[in-house]
Length: 76
Image 1 (tube, rainbow, N blue to C red):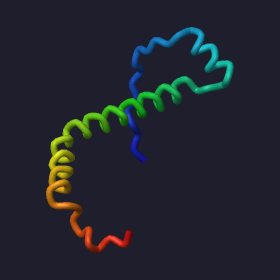
Image 2 (image 1 turned 45 degrees about the vertical axis):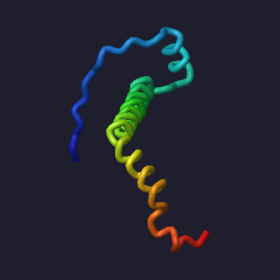
Image 3 (image 1 turned 30 degrees about the vertical axis):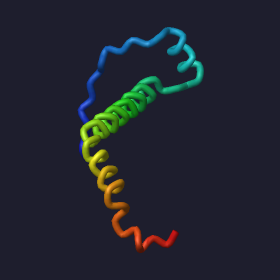
């Protein structure tokens, strides 16, 4: 079983938010890790779309010029 290295970043949170989380028995560390993971995923997706934008434009241009490949085999 491999272990992931853990670091303790300095994070500032609103006092009211922390109080509400504690009142609701929310694990702040897990919630923060989940939030950061979602932010990382969203940023990677955003960057991927930017990096591949030209390929998407080229694909659309091809379809506009030549139509969908294998369109004659479509059942709908």
